[in-house]
Length: 408
Image (tube, rainbow, N blue to C red; front, side, top):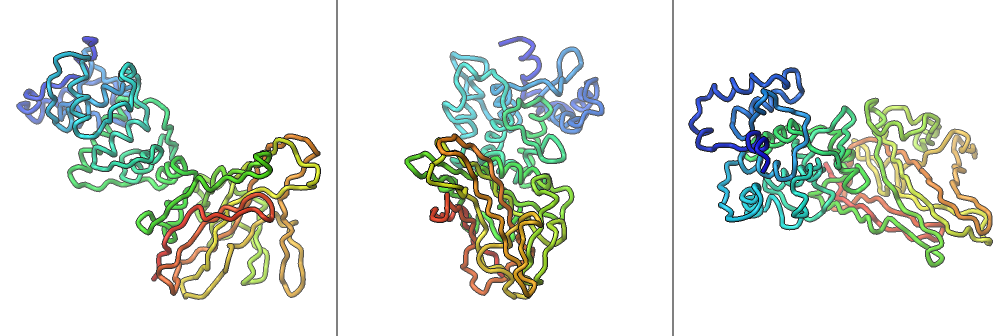
Protein backbone atom coordinates (compact mmCIF):
# COMPACT_ATOMS: atom_id res chain seq x y z
CA UNK A 1 0.00 0.00 0.00
CA UNK A 2 1.07 3.55 -0.67
CA UNK A 3 2.81 4.96 2.45
CA UNK A 4 0.96 8.27 2.18
CA UNK A 5 -2.39 6.45 2.22
CA UNK A 6 -1.30 4.58 5.33
CA UNK A 7 -0.37 7.80 7.08
CA UNK A 8 -3.65 9.37 6.07
CA UNK A 9 -6.20 6.67 6.77
CA UNK A 10 -4.68 4.27 9.29
CA UNK A 11 -5.96 4.51 12.83
CA UNK A 12 -4.15 3.28 15.90
CA UNK A 13 -7.14 2.16 17.94
CA UNK A 14 -5.24 1.90 21.19
CA UNK A 15 -3.90 5.42 20.86
CA UNK A 16 -7.36 6.70 20.02
CA UNK A 17 -8.75 5.16 23.17
CA UNK A 18 -6.00 6.63 25.34
CA UNK A 19 -5.75 10.11 23.89
CA UNK A 20 -7.07 12.99 25.94
CA UNK A 21 -10.24 14.67 24.75
CA UNK A 22 -8.49 17.84 23.63
CA UNK A 23 -5.67 16.34 21.63
CA UNK A 24 -7.75 15.40 18.55
CA UNK A 25 -9.37 18.82 18.50
CA UNK A 26 -5.99 20.49 18.48
CA UNK A 27 -4.90 18.33 15.55
CA UNK A 28 -8.07 19.15 13.62
CA UNK A 29 -7.63 22.86 14.27
CA UNK A 30 -4.18 22.68 12.67
CA UNK A 31 -5.58 21.51 9.33
CA UNK A 32 -5.27 24.61 7.21
CA UNK A 33 -7.67 23.72 4.36
CA UNK A 34 -10.93 23.05 6.25
CA UNK A 35 -11.59 26.51 7.68
CA UNK A 36 -14.86 27.89 6.24
CA UNK A 37 -15.42 24.59 4.39
CA UNK A 38 -19.02 23.32 4.67
CA UNK A 39 -17.73 20.09 6.24
CA UNK A 40 -15.46 21.67 8.87
CA UNK A 41 -17.59 20.60 11.89
CA UNK A 42 -17.89 17.02 10.63
CA UNK A 43 -14.19 16.79 9.74
CA UNK A 44 -13.20 18.18 13.13
CA UNK A 45 -15.40 15.63 14.92
CA UNK A 46 -14.05 12.75 12.83
CA UNK A 47 -10.41 13.68 13.47
CA UNK A 48 -11.15 14.09 17.20
CA UNK A 49 -12.73 10.63 17.28
CA UNK A 50 -9.58 9.25 15.70
CA UNK A 51 -10.81 7.23 12.74
CA UNK A 52 -9.39 9.62 10.13
CA UNK A 53 -6.40 11.92 10.03
CA UNK A 54 -4.93 14.76 8.03
CA UNK A 55 -1.97 14.63 5.67
CA UNK A 56 1.63 15.23 6.81
CA UNK A 57 1.59 18.63 5.08
CA UNK A 58 -1.11 19.87 7.48
CA UNK A 59 -4.05 19.52 5.07
CA UNK A 60 -7.13 17.31 5.05
CA UNK A 61 -7.95 17.61 1.34
CA UNK A 62 -11.73 17.62 1.92
CA UNK A 63 -12.56 17.57 -1.80
CA UNK A 64 -10.28 14.66 -2.63
CA UNK A 65 -12.06 11.47 -3.72
CA UNK A 66 -12.33 8.44 -1.43
CA UNK A 67 -11.88 4.94 -2.83
CA UNK A 68 -14.20 2.03 -2.13
CA UNK A 69 -11.56 0.36 0.01
CA UNK A 70 -10.86 3.56 1.93
CA UNK A 71 -14.55 4.07 2.71
CA UNK A 72 -14.86 0.47 3.91
CA UNK A 73 -11.88 1.05 6.21
CA UNK A 74 -13.25 4.33 7.52
CA UNK A 75 -16.58 2.69 8.41
CA UNK A 76 -14.86 -0.25 10.08
CA UNK A 77 -12.62 2.00 12.15
CA UNK A 78 -15.36 4.49 13.03
CA UNK A 79 -17.61 1.67 14.30
CA UNK A 80 -14.63 0.04 16.04
CA UNK A 81 -15.00 -3.35 14.40
CA UNK A 82 -12.43 -6.02 15.10
CA UNK A 83 -10.63 -6.86 11.87
CA UNK A 84 -9.51 -10.46 11.45
CA UNK A 85 -5.91 -10.64 10.37
CA UNK A 86 -5.36 -11.70 6.76
CA UNK A 87 -2.29 -13.79 6.02
CA UNK A 88 -2.19 -12.59 2.45
CA UNK A 89 -3.93 -10.02 0.29
CA UNK A 90 -4.16 -6.27 -0.15
CA UNK A 91 -3.89 -3.77 2.69
CA UNK A 92 -7.69 -3.47 2.86
CA UNK A 93 -8.40 -7.23 3.13
CA UNK A 94 -9.00 -7.24 6.94
CA UNK A 95 -11.46 -4.36 6.66
CA UNK A 96 -13.19 -5.97 3.68
CA UNK A 97 -13.57 -9.21 5.65
CA UNK A 98 -15.02 -7.32 8.63
CA UNK A 99 -17.56 -5.62 6.35
CA UNK A 100 -18.46 -8.91 4.69
CA UNK A 101 -19.03 -10.54 8.07
CA UNK A 102 -21.46 -7.77 9.06
CA UNK A 103 -23.30 -7.58 5.73
CA UNK A 104 -22.26 -4.00 5.00
CA UNK A 105 -20.48 -5.14 1.86
CA UNK A 106 -21.54 -8.20 -0.09
CA UNK A 107 -19.20 -10.36 -2.12
CA UNK A 108 -18.98 -9.39 -5.77
CA UNK A 109 -20.53 -5.93 -5.46
CA UNK A 110 -17.22 -4.43 -6.53
CA UNK A 111 -14.78 -6.17 -8.91
CA UNK A 112 -11.78 -7.31 -6.88
CA UNK A 113 -9.42 -5.26 -9.03
CA UNK A 114 -11.54 -2.08 -8.69
CA UNK A 115 -11.71 -1.66 -4.92
CA UNK A 116 -9.29 1.25 -5.06
CA UNK A 117 -11.46 3.12 -7.56
CA UNK A 118 -13.47 6.09 -6.20
CA UNK A 119 -16.68 5.10 -4.44
CA UNK A 120 -19.80 6.67 -5.96
CA UNK A 121 -22.42 8.45 -3.89
CA UNK A 122 -24.91 5.67 -4.60
CA UNK A 123 -22.43 2.99 -3.51
CA UNK A 124 -21.74 4.95 -0.34
CA UNK A 125 -25.49 5.22 0.32
CA UNK A 126 -25.90 1.46 -0.02
CA UNK A 127 -23.22 0.71 2.55
CA UNK A 128 -24.47 3.45 4.88
CA UNK A 129 -28.05 2.15 4.87
CA UNK A 130 -26.84 -1.36 5.60
CA UNK A 131 -24.69 -0.02 8.42
CA UNK A 132 -27.84 1.18 10.23
CA UNK A 133 -29.44 -2.24 9.94
CA UNK A 134 -31.53 -1.99 6.77
CA UNK A 135 -31.13 -4.44 3.90
CA UNK A 136 -33.27 -4.93 0.80
CA UNK A 137 -32.96 -6.09 -2.80
CA UNK A 138 -34.06 -3.14 -4.95
CA UNK A 139 -30.82 -1.87 -6.47
CA UNK A 140 -32.11 1.68 -7.13
CA UNK A 141 -33.75 2.21 -3.74
CA UNK A 142 -30.62 2.83 -1.63
CA UNK A 143 -30.48 6.59 -2.23
CA UNK A 144 -34.16 6.94 -1.34
CA UNK A 145 -33.66 5.08 1.95
CA UNK A 146 -30.53 7.11 2.70
CA UNK A 147 -32.39 10.37 2.02
CA UNK A 148 -35.38 9.25 4.09
CA UNK A 149 -33.10 8.61 7.09
CA UNK A 150 -31.21 11.89 6.67
CA UNK A 151 -27.94 10.17 5.72
CA UNK A 152 -27.62 11.76 2.30
CA UNK A 153 -28.25 15.40 1.40
CA UNK A 154 -28.42 16.95 -2.04
CA UNK A 155 -25.61 18.87 -3.68
CA UNK A 156 -27.78 21.97 -4.08
CA UNK A 157 -31.08 23.49 -2.95
CA UNK A 158 -33.11 21.47 -5.48
CA UNK A 159 -31.95 18.13 -4.07
CA UNK A 160 -29.51 17.08 -6.81
CA UNK A 161 -28.25 13.60 -5.91
CA UNK A 162 -25.52 12.88 -8.50
CA UNK A 163 -25.57 9.12 -7.79
CA UNK A 164 -22.62 8.35 -10.08
CA UNK A 165 -20.35 11.14 -8.88
CA UNK A 166 -17.39 10.18 -6.67
CA UNK A 167 -17.54 10.68 -2.92
CA UNK A 168 -15.17 13.21 -1.36
CA UNK A 169 -13.38 12.89 1.97
CA UNK A 170 -15.64 15.56 3.50
CA UNK A 171 -18.76 13.76 2.30
CA UNK A 172 -17.46 10.42 3.57
CA UNK A 173 -16.82 11.54 7.16
CA UNK A 174 -20.12 13.45 7.19
CA UNK A 175 -22.06 10.32 6.22
CA UNK A 176 -20.14 8.19 8.70
CA UNK A 177 -20.97 10.68 11.46
CA UNK A 178 -24.65 10.32 10.57
CA UNK A 179 -24.36 6.53 10.60
CA UNK A 180 -23.01 6.73 14.15
CA UNK A 181 -25.86 9.02 15.24
CA UNK A 182 -28.54 6.76 13.78
CA UNK A 183 -26.98 3.68 15.35
CA UNK A 184 -27.12 5.54 18.67
CA UNK A 185 -30.86 6.07 18.25
CA UNK A 186 -30.70 9.73 17.21
CA UNK A 187 -33.17 10.78 14.49
CA UNK A 188 -31.82 13.07 11.79
CA UNK A 189 -33.58 15.79 9.80
CA UNK A 190 -34.32 14.89 6.19
CA UNK A 191 -34.64 17.21 3.19
CA UNK A 192 -38.01 16.84 1.43
CA UNK A 193 -36.55 17.83 -1.94
CA UNK A 194 -33.77 15.25 -1.61
CA UNK A 195 -36.28 12.54 -0.69
CA UNK A 196 -38.46 13.42 -3.70
CA UNK A 197 -35.47 13.43 -6.04
CA UNK A 198 -34.28 10.09 -4.66
CA UNK A 199 -37.76 8.63 -5.11
CA UNK A 200 -37.75 9.79 -8.74
CA UNK A 201 -34.40 8.07 -9.22
CA UNK A 202 -35.76 4.92 -7.57
CA UNK A 203 -38.96 4.40 -9.60
CA UNK A 204 -39.60 7.46 -11.81
CA UNK A 205 -42.28 9.02 -9.64
CA UNK A 206 -42.44 11.11 -6.46
CA UNK A 207 -45.85 9.91 -5.29
CA UNK A 208 -44.75 8.66 -1.86
CA UNK A 209 -43.00 11.89 -0.94
CA UNK A 210 -45.41 14.31 -2.64
CA UNK A 211 -48.75 12.71 -1.67
CA UNK A 212 -48.23 11.07 1.71
CA UNK A 213 -51.91 11.67 2.51
CA UNK A 214 -52.78 9.15 -0.20
CA UNK A 215 -49.78 6.83 -0.37
CA UNK A 216 -47.32 5.31 2.05
CA UNK A 217 -45.18 2.19 1.88
CA UNK A 218 -46.62 0.77 5.08
CA UNK A 219 -50.06 0.93 3.50
CA UNK A 220 -49.01 -1.51 0.80
CA UNK A 221 -47.93 0.83 -1.99
CA UNK A 222 -46.47 -1.19 -4.83
CA UNK A 223 -45.21 0.48 -7.99
CA UNK A 224 -45.50 -1.85 -10.99
CA UNK A 225 -42.99 -0.31 -13.37
CA UNK A 226 -43.11 -3.38 -15.62
CA UNK A 227 -46.77 -2.55 -16.46
CA UNK A 228 -45.99 0.95 -17.72
CA UNK A 229 -45.15 -0.05 -21.31
CA UNK A 230 -47.52 -1.13 -24.06
CA UNK A 231 -46.69 -2.51 -27.52
CA UNK A 232 -49.00 -3.34 -30.42
CA UNK A 233 -48.69 -4.50 -34.04
CA UNK A 234 -45.93 -6.98 -33.20
CA UNK A 235 -43.80 -4.28 -31.63
CA UNK A 236 -44.24 -1.73 -34.42
CA UNK A 237 -45.70 0.70 -31.87
CA UNK A 238 -44.44 0.98 -28.30
CA UNK A 239 -45.42 3.57 -25.72
CA UNK A 240 -43.69 3.85 -22.34
CA UNK A 241 -44.25 6.00 -19.29
CA UNK A 242 -41.04 7.96 -18.68
CA UNK A 243 -42.02 9.52 -15.36
CA UNK A 244 -45.04 10.59 -13.34
CA UNK A 245 -44.45 13.75 -11.32
CA UNK A 246 -46.57 15.48 -8.69
CA UNK A 247 -46.08 19.28 -8.59
CA UNK A 248 -47.35 21.28 -5.61
CA UNK A 249 -48.64 24.52 -7.09
CA UNK A 250 -48.78 26.16 -3.64
CA UNK A 251 -45.01 25.82 -3.32
CA UNK A 252 -43.12 28.36 -5.46
CA UNK A 253 -39.89 26.49 -4.71
CA UNK A 254 -41.10 23.08 -5.88
CA UNK A 255 -38.13 21.87 -7.98
CA UNK A 256 -40.51 20.39 -10.57
CA UNK A 257 -42.54 23.57 -11.06
CA UNK A 258 -40.83 24.10 -14.43
CA UNK A 259 -42.69 21.05 -15.79
CA UNK A 260 -46.02 22.93 -15.66
CA UNK A 261 -46.58 25.35 -18.58
CA UNK A 262 -47.78 28.81 -17.62
CA UNK A 263 -50.77 28.68 -19.97
CA UNK A 264 -52.42 25.57 -18.54
CA UNK A 265 -55.94 25.94 -17.20
CA UNK A 266 -58.47 23.51 -15.84
CA UNK A 267 -62.24 23.20 -15.83
CA UNK A 268 -63.57 23.14 -12.27
CA UNK A 269 -66.84 21.27 -12.72
CA UNK A 270 -67.91 21.96 -9.14
CA UNK A 271 -67.67 25.75 -9.54
CA UNK A 272 -68.40 25.57 -13.29
CA UNK A 273 -65.58 27.77 -14.45
CA UNK A 274 -62.11 27.71 -15.95
CA UNK A 275 -59.21 28.25 -13.54
CA UNK A 276 -55.49 28.86 -13.90
CA UNK A 277 -53.22 26.10 -12.63
CA UNK A 278 -51.30 28.78 -10.74
CA UNK A 279 -54.18 29.18 -8.31
CA UNK A 280 -53.79 27.71 -4.84
CA UNK A 281 -55.09 24.46 -3.50
CA UNK A 282 -54.08 22.03 -6.23
CA UNK A 283 -51.44 19.57 -7.34
CA UNK A 284 -50.64 19.19 -11.03
CA UNK A 285 -49.94 15.58 -12.02
CA UNK A 286 -47.50 15.45 -14.93
CA UNK A 287 -47.40 12.26 -17.02
CA UNK A 288 -44.44 12.11 -19.42
CA UNK A 289 -44.35 9.31 -21.96
CA UNK A 290 -42.71 8.47 -25.30
CA UNK A 291 -44.42 6.89 -28.31
CA UNK A 292 -42.14 5.01 -30.72
CA UNK A 293 -43.47 3.92 -34.12
CA UNK A 294 -41.14 2.02 -36.43
CA UNK A 295 -43.40 2.47 -39.46
CA UNK A 296 -46.48 4.68 -39.22
CA UNK A 297 -49.47 2.59 -40.30
CA UNK A 298 -51.13 3.62 -43.54
CA UNK A 299 -54.59 2.87 -42.17
CA UNK A 300 -54.25 5.33 -39.25
CA UNK A 301 -54.63 9.09 -39.39
CA UNK A 302 -53.56 9.56 -35.79
CA UNK A 303 -52.44 7.47 -32.84
CA UNK A 304 -53.41 8.23 -29.27
CA UNK A 305 -50.38 7.63 -27.03
CA UNK A 306 -50.32 6.06 -23.61
CA UNK A 307 -50.58 8.04 -20.37
CA UNK A 308 -50.82 7.64 -16.60
CA UNK A 309 -53.75 8.90 -14.55
CA UNK A 310 -54.80 9.16 -10.91
CA UNK A 311 -58.07 7.30 -10.31
CA UNK A 312 -60.21 7.48 -7.25
CA UNK A 313 -63.17 9.01 -5.49
CA UNK A 314 -61.79 12.08 -3.77
CA UNK A 315 -63.19 13.68 -0.63
CA UNK A 316 -62.45 17.01 0.98
CA UNK A 317 -62.18 17.82 4.69
CA UNK A 318 -65.94 17.74 5.13
CA UNK A 319 -66.29 14.29 3.62
CA UNK A 320 -68.11 15.64 0.56
CA UNK A 321 -67.33 13.94 -2.74
CA UNK A 322 -65.42 16.37 -4.95
CA UNK A 323 -64.46 14.31 -7.98
CA UNK A 324 -65.12 10.81 -9.20
CA UNK A 325 -63.02 8.74 -11.56
CA UNK A 326 -60.19 10.83 -12.96
CA UNK A 327 -59.11 14.14 -11.49
CA UNK A 328 -59.78 17.24 -13.52
CA UNK A 329 -58.20 17.21 -16.96
CA UNK A 330 -55.87 20.08 -17.81
CA UNK A 331 -55.15 21.79 -21.10
CA UNK A 332 -54.37 25.22 -22.60
CA UNK A 333 -57.34 27.56 -22.49
CA UNK A 334 -58.12 27.31 -26.21
CA UNK A 335 -58.76 23.59 -25.86
CA UNK A 336 -62.02 24.14 -23.94
CA UNK A 337 -65.38 24.60 -25.69
CA UNK A 338 -68.45 26.01 -23.87
CA UNK A 339 -71.43 23.66 -24.18
CA UNK A 340 -74.01 25.65 -22.22
CA UNK A 341 -75.01 26.10 -18.59
CA UNK A 342 -71.43 27.05 -17.69
CA UNK A 343 -70.21 23.58 -18.63
CA UNK A 344 -67.14 22.90 -20.73
CA UNK A 345 -66.06 20.19 -23.10
CA UNK A 346 -62.38 19.26 -23.35
CA UNK A 347 -61.15 18.89 -26.92
CA UNK A 348 -57.57 18.17 -25.93
CA UNK A 349 -57.00 15.04 -28.01
CA UNK A 350 -53.25 14.85 -27.98
CA UNK A 351 -53.07 12.34 -30.84
CA UNK A 352 -49.82 11.80 -32.77
CA UNK A 353 -49.94 12.04 -36.56
CA UNK A 354 -47.52 10.82 -39.22
CA UNK A 355 -47.10 9.77 -42.84
CA UNK A 356 -47.45 6.14 -43.90
CA UNK A 357 -44.17 4.26 -43.41
CA UNK A 358 -42.59 7.11 -41.43
CA UNK A 359 -40.61 6.41 -38.27
CA UNK A 360 -41.94 8.47 -35.38
CA UNK A 361 -40.43 8.98 -31.93
CA UNK A 362 -42.59 11.45 -30.05
CA UNK A 363 -42.29 12.54 -26.41
CA UNK A 364 -45.70 13.49 -25.08
CA UNK A 365 -46.88 15.11 -21.86
CA UNK A 366 -50.34 15.08 -20.32
CA UNK A 367 -51.58 16.85 -17.20
CA UNK A 368 -54.22 16.47 -14.53
CA UNK A 369 -55.24 18.62 -11.58
CA UNK A 370 -55.72 17.00 -8.20
CA UNK A 371 -57.56 19.28 -5.74
CA UNK A 372 -56.05 19.29 -2.28
CA UNK A 373 -57.92 18.09 0.78
CA UNK A 374 -57.57 15.35 3.35
CA UNK A 375 -58.98 12.08 2.09
CA UNK A 376 -61.91 11.08 4.29
CA UNK A 377 -63.24 7.98 2.61
CA UNK A 378 -66.01 6.09 4.39
CA UNK A 379 -64.24 2.87 3.38
CA UNK A 380 -60.90 2.61 5.26
CA UNK A 381 -59.76 -0.28 3.07
CA UNK A 382 -60.31 1.49 -0.23
CA UNK A 383 -57.23 1.98 -2.35
CA UNK A 384 -56.14 4.98 -4.35
CA UNK A 385 -54.60 4.11 -7.67
CA UNK A 386 -52.47 5.38 -10.51
CA UNK A 387 -53.30 3.61 -13.76
CA UNK A 388 -51.41 3.27 -17.02
CA UNK A 389 -53.56 3.50 -20.16
CA UNK A 390 -52.05 1.87 -23.24
CA UNK A 391 -52.01 2.98 -26.87
CA UNK A 392 -55.30 3.95 -28.50
CA UNK A 393 -58.90 3.82 -27.37
CA UNK A 394 -58.74 0.05 -26.92
CA UNK A 395 -55.43 0.05 -25.07
CA UNK A 396 -55.28 -1.91 -21.80
CA UNK A 397 -55.52 -0.23 -18.41
CA UNK A 398 -53.14 -1.43 -15.69
CA UNK A 399 -52.88 -0.35 -12.08
CA UNK A 400 -49.22 0.60 -11.74
CA UNK A 401 -49.34 2.16 -8.28
CA UNK A 402 -51.70 1.36 -5.46
CA UNK A 403 -51.70 2.47 -1.85
CA UNK A 404 -54.13 2.30 1.02
CA UNK A 405 -55.89 5.62 1.43
CA UNK A 406 -55.51 7.29 4.80
CA UNK A 407 -58.88 7.99 6.40
CA UNK A 408 -60.03 10.15 9.26
